[in-house]
Image 1 (cartoon, rainbow, N blue to C red):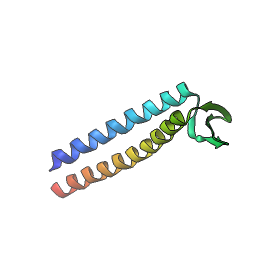
Image 2 (spheres, rainbow, N blue to C red; image 1 turned 90 degrees about the vertical axis):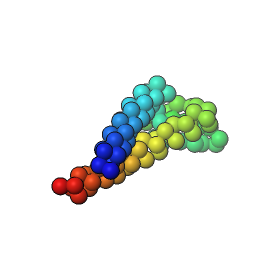
Image 3 (cartoon, rainbow, N blue to C red; image 1 turned 45 degrees about the horizontal axis):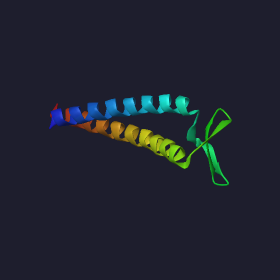
Image 4 (cartoon, helix red, strand yellow; image 1 turned 45 degrees about the vertical axis):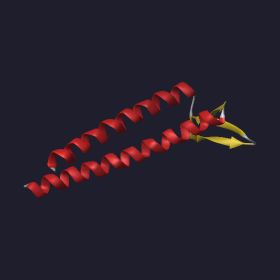
Length: 92
């Protein structure tokens, strides 16, 4: 069971870091992200440092979902790490 917890912990940490890196690269490439952007009158904007770039609904939605996945994966990675530590503590 301990090996499974450690493998899960590593998997989630690697996935979280890779997803965050992809998000940062994508944000710079697209010119912003959805949470810093806006929706006004049916137009979608990505925002970065008070600069906005108009994009399609699909691009805005992708950015929003990618941001949500970054937060979700970090929470899962944290939970997996805590579980691995608990498994280690029980073993000792």
